[in-house]
Length: 227
Length: 182
Image: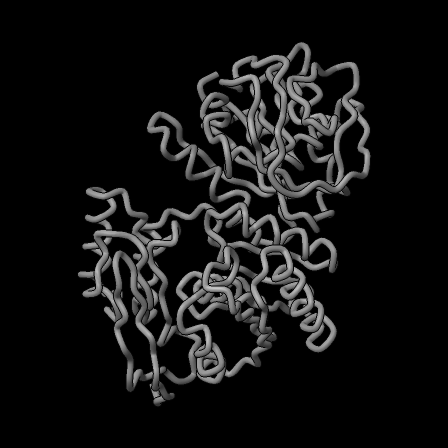
């Protein structure tokens, strides 16, 4: 089936897309909704502007939709993007990286229903520790692009999610009840390489911005390199 | 042994509608399980199992509607069965219930008139998404309805067959755990 991937550039949407490919589906287009509202419930992600570079690395076209991020209006923006994907690329469904958020998942389900599209959520209710381990096993290269809950501090910004970091996140879960994969919004991630990337992303310049209890790793320069 | 039955047309949907059920059953150390797609199902598979769980599927899934006769063994089956969403529709249809086209998506409140063994509370917010609802035949007792009047949980009057239209694997896992305790 030809699918569009709802793509934020983070680990969940990238891994969901990988799963869809493994099950024989073709990702024809990526859809990124860029919200101008930093408080957006649906779409806010640091480094969302780099989905264009990721799309080049994957070699799949990207549809970027700018949304003002007004609460229900941004859903209309997502619907417009999905409608365009259907018209231009003939997609029959979408794949999302939703894990636990019924708020997000039910809204995407509704839009899919309105546009007569299949909706796939292959990570739905997936065990978070297992998700992190599978990312490692499948050689995904992921960095932390944002932290939004103590005791995660500025030291985590830009850190690669390797075996050691995953172990530490699991320990923090036990001690502080932090969701180790960040599904509660504790962590945002950015994927620099995955098995289906034709090229990988090299970060050339970035700034850590940590204030109070949260921070972002703002990538200011990045390019593609051969794998 | 618990037999988990997939009703998904697309294999990818099983990660969303079958895997979470397997994870819940797997946590119960005394229970082992096996999973089968309904198209491969035989009566002897069901007879070997202690309980059956018939899973839901994607909103756009319609293939199972053409395969409901695969479940006709339920007419003379006596062990506990739990049907979720499409699974509830299948159980209801085998016993002469009707479907009514009605699309509902999102969180909904249900009022539980009979907790039976499944429910812990008299009111619950549940996650629903379906395109058709069940008008149960006289073989069933209604256990729960939503504020909009949709029948959300039924039980067969003489068998331990349960159907829930919402998705307890997403919200209210205890309903599946309660079923496993029967």
